[in-house]
Structure formats: C-alpha cells, structure tokens
Amino acid sequence: MDLNELYRTVIMDNYKNPKNRGLVHTDDYHFVHLNNPSCGDNMNVEVKIENGKIVDVKQEASGCSISMSSASVMTDVLIGKTVEEAKKIINDFYEMVMGKDDIDDEALGEAIAYMGVRSFPARIKCATLAWKAIEKGIDEVINSEK
Image (cartoon, one colour):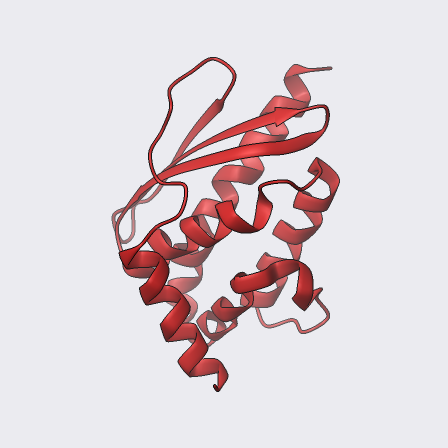
C-alpha cells in the first residue's frame, strides 16, 4: 500500500468510525475547545492526566474529514503516554505535516498517514487542530499543578 492510499484509508476509517468520541464532562477531565474559523472546524477535547501520564482522551469534533479523523487518531496515539512522550509526539506530528522528515515514525503510529497533508498547506490547520487542543490541555493541567 502506498502512502497516498494509506492516507486516504486512515482518514476515511477514522472519519467514519471515530475513536474515543464523546465527552464525559467530569471534573477529572480537563476540557479544551478550539476552532478553525477559516473552514469551520470545531474541536472539543477532554484529557485526563494522572501521575504524569495521559490515562484518557475524549474528543468531539465537527468539520472536515481531515480534522475529525485526526482527532480520532490523536486520541489513540496519545492515550497511555507520559506527558513528556506526548509532547514529543505532538511536536513530531507538527514537524511531519510541515514537511520535516526527521521524526519518530513508530511513535506516531497511524498519524504518519497525515504526512500527505504537507502537500496541501491549507489543510495543515485542519490536521493539527486536535493536536493543538490536546497540547493546550496538557499545558493547562501541568501549569495548574505548579
């Protein structure tokens, strides 16, 4: 399977069958909402962090197939990672979609399929919206613990 085919398969599978969809609205989850006003994507993410580890992530996305599927993949990739591991993976994801190749392919898991987004600069914001939301959530949780 070539990368373009993988890209389409991962996006469509996660768009049609999103993972970790649905918010729980409890105090032990930190909520973040972001939107992309240029295309109408809306992203709600809840993250639960215990002892420096991401134990759960929930998402509720609306918008294009890229933003919605990226949210699904993001949750699957980051659950179970330490905060430090997650921040590295998030950074690698940003660098990958911007065109850099010096990334940890294995740690990105299915997110590697979004490499194709680099060919469509207008869609980079769509692909990174969920990742920006989880990054903001992680930072807010860490800063609240200081």
